Amino acid sequence: MLIFFSIVLLIYSLANLYLYFKGYHAFPSLQKHRGLYAVVFFMLAAVFIVAKVLESRHSSVFTDILNIMGGFWLAFMLYGFLFFILSDIIYLVLKIFNVINHENALQYRKWAFIFTGSLSAVLILAGFINAVIPVVTKYDLTINKNAGEIREMKIAAVSDIHLGSIIRKRSMRKLSDILQKLKPDLVLLLGDIVDGEIGPVMRGDLLQHFHCPQCEYGLLAISGNHEFIGGASRTIPYIESKGIRLLNDEILTIGGEIQLIGRKDRSSDYFYGIKRKSLAELMSNADTAKPVIVLDHQPYDLNETASFPVDLQLSGHTHNGQMWPLNYITRMIFDLSYGYNKRHNTHFIVSSGYGLWGPRVRIGSRSEVLLINLHFNGSSN
Image (tube, rainbow, N blue to C red; front, side, top):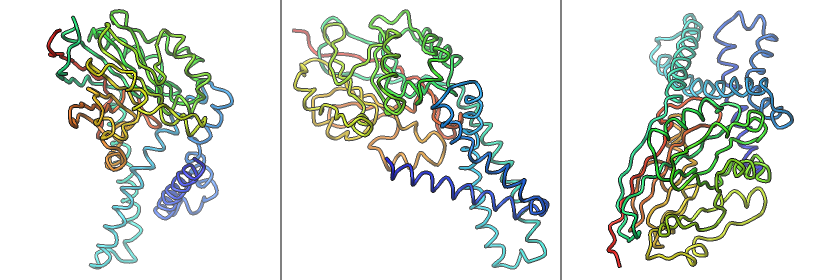
């Protein structure tokens, strides 16, 4: 983890230095006031990190504001960096063909900065609007097993809410309204219910705004990596105090027939040195003649899961990259970054998540709630 965070901090610092010098060389006036420019720029660049540090010590509206500002700066850093790289490539091409010379180079840098900054701002605004309008993604699946008297079941699945400084009570009320309209038989929360530090959540008791009174089989959940980042000893009891049953490497039978296997997130080993049970251990206690649904926050090792008589696995974690082109990276990392896939007799669905991490911006992905209509057509005994 230390190596990982060191690499992230290095990339973050280099990207910000690149943006700093792009602005510095684009406007001569900034060179005359370079001290002030440096202070303002690096305050903006540091605000996200400062917000996280302050939040870990004391959560407040002030740290919420810093987190929001820092998140938008992260988005600008990503798209500003990409667009400035593109403008540098265009600059080199134009210079090779003598379109740009010493006299007009400054004008090019100036207008490239203005255009790049404006384009990034418009894109981020569009991504913000996109992020606050969740959609319902529907799947109809048939499981060829007998579920007793249950012929159909409507499941709503929600991953990666990331309750905290950015996702707050308004988002939870909207989610509750969506669930009330969908009228699912069962609601499954697929991990990362909490963003990290539990302080911003408990300060406003945010989970009190989440409810699904018409769910016949209740609210069930599994842990995600962020439950452990924020301190599982505080986060998980808070979640369970709101009537949400968290499955911790255990099997729960729904309606006397349908078996849910809730897996502890693999990050429990990274943060607490506690390894989760293997799928083989969990499956040894399952009646595989009946429907088996696995809940696993991070969609790794799908072929291993498909080697067992698992009928459906639901996951989240990837956010589908959240902001283009990061979705190309998640596709390289995970067996399934988003959507539906079937391997052998196992259905897999990975959600892009309801909430988000960092910037409240989604570009190339949507905030979603899954609605899965399961049909059981096994013969009755």
